[in-house]
Image (cartoon, rainbow, N blue to C red):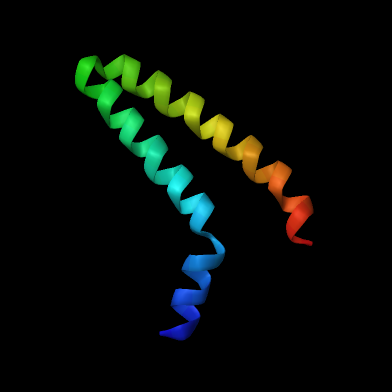
Length: 59
């Protein structure tokens, strides 16, 4: 259980980013399904770029 908590704390910023992107995507999808897909794709690309930039700091 301690390993799970430590892992969640370590990756908290990534999990918050993912939850926020999901919330924005669902909200846009409620207005229009294509808008939800476009928003989700844009946020996925932004999240991947931020993740790649953050890899250098963890090593």
